[in-house]
Image (cartoon, rainbow, N blue to C red; front, side, top):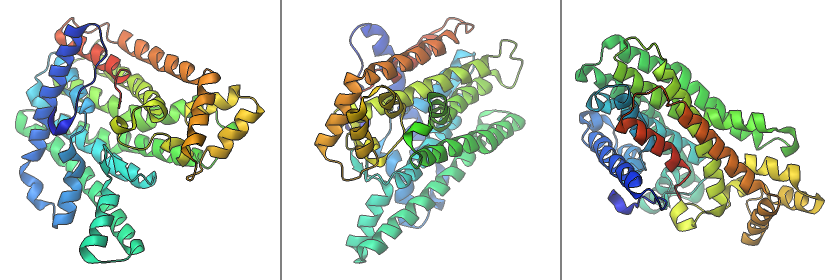
Length: 374
């Protein structure tokens, strides 16, 4: 993988994982090459906004979402090459949500490098000599504008599908669903995540937390799979409801993905994670881990969790004690079991698909979500 990234896969079934690694790397390169060479990028001006817009794209993500577009297209008998602009659009959509999410979460690093707002705050401070407050404002303003521009870029990329033979009406349906279904659901999930952090932890329940996770993370994956399958079916008959089944498959995987992310946020190698371990605790995020731990903890343990949760000055020892509580109450194990259960439910939805290497890759894609280390 480019830019020093390493695809970490579990041991066993080496041939299966090797095939998946090859599939991910090849499609990842296609998607980023498409974005790097996109002819309309000269309109992204001035230079700071151009650089901010391409900041995470140049760093290269794992590209799991665009891979899902392409595999879903192929799984229903479609031509992956035709769906490539949609895969690129999904990756840019994901990127703008990261840029804005980093502002919301006040994160200073992503993928081991400064976030967009942090990078350009430093640029304003060092390059223009402004004070800390004005520099921070510039970084935030630029990141907001870059994310907004990336969102409009998504629609332009979907428009490129027409040049690859996708019917105008079908392209319009893809754009409409992105604008009127995907975006509102994702924004709802993001705001619920913020609102939950303001609420007493005891007022939440597992159903509400999982609903928030589904909207925040599952919605984009659902769109990616549905979009790829819809392009592959060319808007034709779908008597087995394959596009919807693939969308549901991806939605369940998305919820499991976020649960695994929450686990990694406390247990991963910080160098691989690319951000401080325990940042979700310091930010006060009402994850399912927090809910389940509070439900099982004794009074002393509850007091420590509540004292640490949302405390930006919580020490490493405080975070380690929270992790210890999660372990001793069985919280880590229960959340991991739930994530695995969701993946099993998702893979079962693939049953009606014709046997193919695409179907096998989709199953491995789902399994990889819980095997990744960052």
